[in-house]
Length: 134
Image (tube, rainbow, N blue to C red; front, side):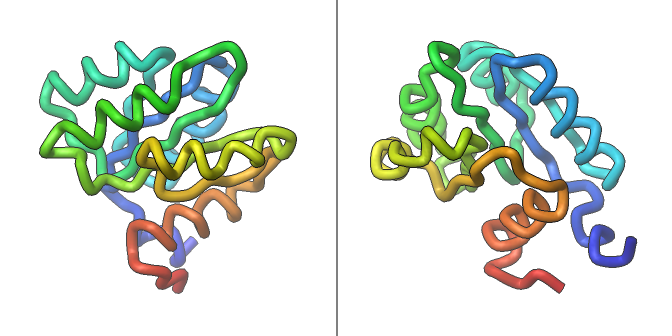
């Protein structure tokens, strides 16, 4: 798929409490030749960053009670290597009313689930490539 070639080598950190979400998203991204690391908790996500992994984008699931996303976003923004890294929240449509909280904590944007792989790539393209979706 030619439109996905631009994602080759993109470093992605997928943070989600639920293994199924991490696996689904991670597998799709790896099929598109992205370098994917997965974390189930904020602590694991920050450990990946501390180990030297510098993601180009962070995809974070919003799951209640789950991960304290806002604390993770704030922590990422304090780390110089990730202060400008796009953070995309993957959330159920019923949780999209939290957008202002996520933005205040440092999230770049969000996508409501269920979402398609094409929809996820479009959002990623918008934040990684300044809105160019070709």
